[in-house]
Image (cartoon, rainbow, N blue to C red; front, side, top):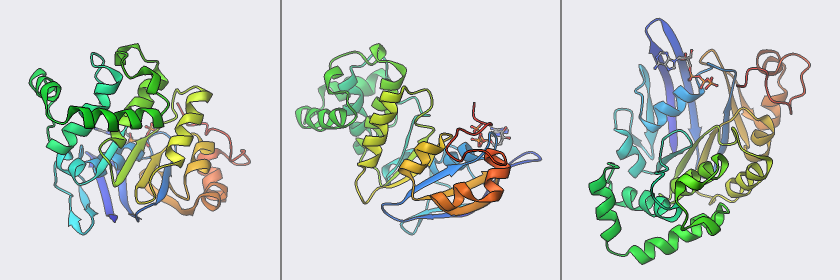
Length: 262
Ligand SMILES: Nc1ncnc2c1ncn2[C@@H]1O[C@H](COP(=O)(O)OP(=O)(O)OP(=O)(O)O)[C@@H](O)[C@H]1O
């Protein structure tokens, strides 16, 4: 479904990502790990379209999206959570999810007052609200539907952002450090939600917490200095000696958070 070939991104003399290839089938649960500066966010940027590769291609279902704008990629089913500011503080929690789904279907990418006014008076608002309620229930925020998004805690905002991404019914879900800064309770909720993703959705997870990776991912790519060090089944990759040396530190417990994490 998603095919990345030879993705390379240079910033001047620095090669942030060096010829990385990856294929994600529907239902894939893939994690990308690596120390700070390894190129993980750059990889997500190249897939989402907020950055263009110096070389290489991004193909979804046979369609070359390498030069396609982020909004069009989103319409093709690539959703990203946790780095883009999709939570609008002045809207209610429910309206944030309704707006995300509505924007997606209407390809409305602007977030201005005009878009919001149109959204408030739009047709089929009730159906959209019902679907949004279901998404909120899935992330444990049903009780906050009518609260302003600004009243949510950090962890709740992240879960709301995830609900908003899921409201677009993605085919590929890109997650950028979803567990960062979450309480244990919110991490558990996150694991539940992501563990229950539809079977046809492919998930690409960038995450420092190896226990979250072990829980959610079937396969892993380990990046170091922009290059793929190891790729394969999650436990094989995490226990690979080169990974333990380069990423976790020789002799470190593979379940521990890497020393390079913020
Ligand atoms: N816009 C940019 N201009 C110049 N250099 C950049 C830019 N974006 C990223 N880099 C550099 O590219 C390298 C890879 O960065 P990237 O953010 O992809 O790493 P990362 O693995 O996500 O790191 P972290 O875990 O710290 O988020 C780093 O050396 C970074 O400083």
